Image (cartoon, rainbow, N blue to C red; front, side, top):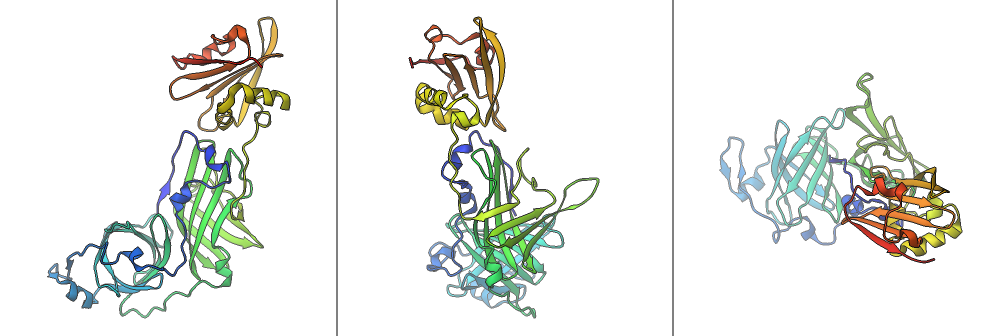
Length: 405
């Protein structure tokens, strides 16, 4: 499975209307298991025929390959019957598959991961079509693969059973397993930190999930399968939490009334520093409003908040996005006691600088092309105040903005 750790410049804007990120574009939209158009899965219009090799390396025709059951699997993607041949060499995997309705071979290339899930091999295979679909699967046995077919727009259950093997096909999701299905938002999610989960129930004993978490600009993402037993979907990862303990990382999902609960011995698994997946989730998305300058501590009163908003204008949201809180110190400047501080945001602290005096506000933010500085003090309309000067040396160009309030 794919596990991702990334860092971005500004992630906070992703949650202005809810803790939903474009990563759901990363996660994709979970489609119903019954496709309405077979072309979604690589029909003759968008598939490429490939030459299949036999057991001894000899080339066989397409017709011969369809009738050659040695090493072939049969199964379904959604409600479409397929046949597939998968060859594995160490950690590499390749093969072909075709829909029984079309008999057109579609090439597969990918890898097998023996180090992700304890006691199971996982397989990742991408298809050579315009749809760029991928097979994600778990070898439940050498003769039985469960998983899904997915691309950026859809995900469908998939299973393969080696022809001739005495294996019962998986059961469709029952009422209890279906309760896992859907988009979930961490209960503690806020503007500057949060988590979400997308879960697709593939079969009565298997879910596919994608987790996303962020704190400031630090992100974490993880996708894998959970095996359902006794109404608990469980993943045991082969990685260890602590070298000295040699413990496997364990994720266990359960439904408690209308909430999703995640038990883990390492909620930060595959997250950035200070980032963790939530333990409790609510169904759907929640609205998360941008806090005010007063609420994050840029200014001391709601009246100052209004003045600050008027002063910085369209840059108000930019200041908020880069300031989860301000660390202020008191200084004596020009014979007056003032508060001098910089912004803090996990992953990108110090983007903004502030000075608050009895009558004036001084605020500056680092932009792509220099520092944008704002004040209502005419004496400092075209120069940086001394308490802010050292910080301002980080950029050569300063754009001055004075407004009388």
